[in-house]
Length: 179
Image (cartoon, rainbow, N blue to C red; front, side, top):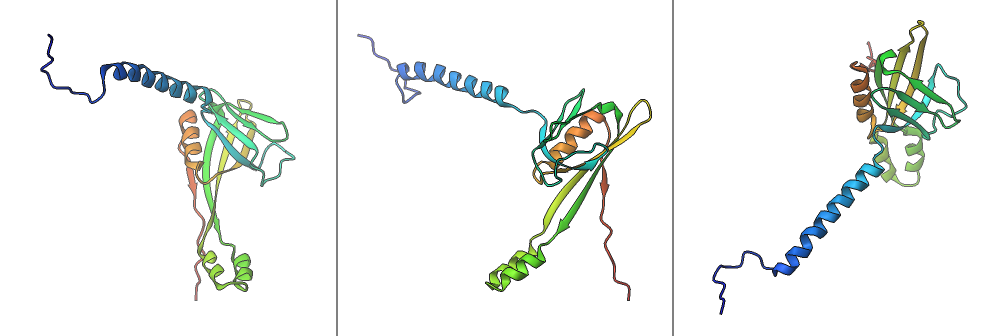
C-alpha cells in the first residue's frame, strides 16, 4: 500500500496539467506567428496635401500610404505614383498643427436644439508633416502630408529614427488685439 502524504499543490489532477501546458505553448506560438505574419511595420495612412510631385489625388483622400524603413521611405499615392525617398537626402522634417471649430455648422444645428451649442467647444485638430529633400545633384523637393491624429507622433518618430534629424515644430502666430 502506497500512501502519498505530501500535500497537493495543484487543485487539478496531473493528467490535466500535462495536457494544459502544451496547449498553452501552442496558443502562444500561434499568437506570436500571427503578429509576425500580420505586422505592417512602419506603414502609415496619410493625405498627400501637396508637394513637388503633381498628382490627381484629392487633398482630402486618406488612401495614400507612407512606409518608413531604414533604407527607404516610400510614398504610395492612390493614383498609382510611387515616390521613393532615400532617408539620407531628407534635410528637414516639420510638424504643424491646425485647429479649427465648426461654428457655422453648430450654430445652424442650435436652431433645432440648443444642446448643439456644446459642439462649438470641440476643436478639430489636423497634423501636417513636411519633408524637404535634396538630391546629390542639388535638386530640392518637398512633400506636405497630413497624418491621422492618433498616428502622427509615431510617424514623426519613425522619420526621425531613419533620418537622424529632429523635427521642427511650427507654431501658429496668435493674433493679439492692440487697442
